[in-house]
Structures are given as structure tokens and as C-alpha cells.
Image: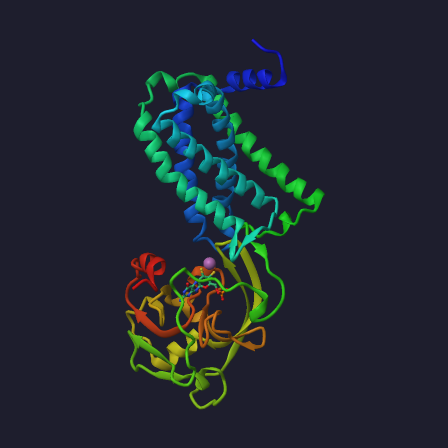
Length: 371
Ligand SMILES: Nc1nc2c(c(=O)[nH]1)N[C@H]1C(S)=C(S)[C@@H](COP(=O)(O)O)O[C@H]1N2
Ligand SMILES: [Mo]
């Protein structure tokens, strides 16, 4: 047995390590939980949802420990290049995706701000995570072993797991402290992890759309907004009637400062001007049974809000004192405070009052724009 630092670290890891099979199952459980918490976190826009982000970060840190245990165990197998098989290649690709997801996650919390076109490091993190899922499934297919009862027995194993979670929590807290002391910029992130984009108006924050959701610029004069569904009358508005430029519809303009937080990792606070959705609904006359309001883009992209929340939302024609640019959703885009950016539908042309929620919106927002 060696006595060098590497050998010592290896022995320390060995001593801490749960039984091998349990390590493997823990890795699987952590990856699945990270996928689930990562996905759910994207739907959270209000600060009361902070626990989901914490869970994601702390589990992510315990992942490193499990990966360490595993690598110590299989290092000899990986080192014998001549004996690599197809399944070894899958294992190594799985390892690379895992390390990629971990490294980009860590870099992100330290405030590193590398951008590839409009891709932030957070988007790259999501990319690694999405690649990891099928790779891990493939890796498992060749090495699947059911855990045995005795793998779970013993107080020591429970203690090891508790210590790992605690270690993850402490590591995450220390990172926050390090950010503050070293002034990395990482402490400017919101509870969602998003970094600030400063300034006012169209030019001060990125244009973010799904790959294929890219309509031609909309001619304001030909465009109308229709209010339809569970309403007494179905009014149609021209742009000037909403932008407060004719003033004959009973719809008065309104404005509000609201924070847009995109899941690709940035946020911006802007003053938005337009019309209050509640004013539109009142003018149309909402039927008793109405429960949701769906906002539909000319591209088919859409999102629904419960009717009480929808009344408070704004349909904006202007941002930071400027008319909305095409990229930011001209002539009209939804401003839904407390909701994540992907729910702020751009290029809105229909407001539909409905009795039901719209589960299909989850698929539609991913696919809209593809013919
Ligand atoms: N119709 C439509 N609306 C959309 C999108 C889209 O792809 N199509 N992208 C959403 C996403 S993911 C975000 S973060 C915001 C971004 O708004 P911005 O481009 O004005 O920054 O718009 C949302 N509204
Ligand atoms: Mo977004």
C-alpha cells in the first residue's frame, strides 16, 4: 500500500464509502432526482420556491462524493486501455457527461459568465444533464445489478449518508461565503440562480426564443388582438387602441415594473407599459364558469394563467419607455410577474377565456414553430 497523498485520499474515500452496489444506486438516484428538481425548478418563479433550488445544489454536491467512491473502485478497470470494450466507452461517455454537468453547475454558482451566442453556462449545464440521462440508461443496461437487502443494513451506512448530505449543505454555504469574500459576481444571482442584466429598454436584455419560434416581424397596422372564449362579447383591438394612441375604447393604459427571469440563467427588471388584462376581461364580460385565461402567440406558442392571476397581468406594448422590438414580442407580449420567462408569451394575438387549464401547453411551447 502506498503512502503518497493520492493513496491516502483513496484510502479515506474507501473508508467513507458505502457498499459498492449502494454507491451505484445512489448515483442513479441522485441523477434522477437532479433531473426532476432541475426540471421543476424551471417552473418556479417566486421566492417561496427556494427549497427546490437548494435541494438541487446540495444533491449535486453529494454527487461528487459518490462519483469519487465509484472512480476509486473502477480506476484499475479504466486504466487498462487494452481491455476496453464497447460498454467501457459508454461508461466513459457517461462519466464525461456527469463531470460536465457537475463542473458547469459549480462554475455557474461561482458567477462565471461565459456565453456561447445566447447560450449561458446554465444552458450548457442543462445540455450535459440531458445527455447524461440516456447515457446513464445505456450504461445501466449493461451493468444492472439489483441491490441486496444487506447493502442497506447497518447504522454506519445511514450515518454515512447523513454525513454526505450535511457535507453537501456545508459546501454550498461555504461557496456563498467564498463568493462574497472573493467578490466573484456569483452573489448577484437570484434565488433561481439567474444573473442580472442591467439597463432599461429593448437593448438591455437578450432576446430568447425557442429554436424554431421565430416569426416574421408583425405589421402593426394589420395586426389585431382578439378576446374570445367564455366572454359575453368578443372584442377585437387594433394596435393603436391598446398602445394608448387613440383612447376611444375605454381601455386605459397601465404600466408596471416587473422582473423577467429566463431559465437560461439571466434576469432583468424593466418598466413595462400596455394594458391590464383585467381591463380587457371586464370590457368583454367574463362568464361565470371561466377559470383560466390562455395567451396565444401568432406562432402557436401559448400559456394559461388562473383567471385571478391573469387579471393582474399586463399585455405590454412598451418596455423601458420604448416600443417593444420585434425580438421582444412586438406588437404585444405578456408580462406575468412571478412567472418564469418562458411563460411570458411574445407576439400575442389572442386572449382566450377558458373553463379549463391547458396541459398540452407544455408540449406546444417546446414544439411551436416546427411545421
Ligand atoms: N411566442 C413565444 N414567446 C416566448 C418565447 C418563445 O420562444 N416564443 N420564449 C419565452 C422565453 S423562454 C423567455 S425567457 C421570454 C424571453 O423574452 P425576451 O426575448 O423578450 O427576453 O419570452 C418567452 N416568450
Ligand atoms: Mo427563457
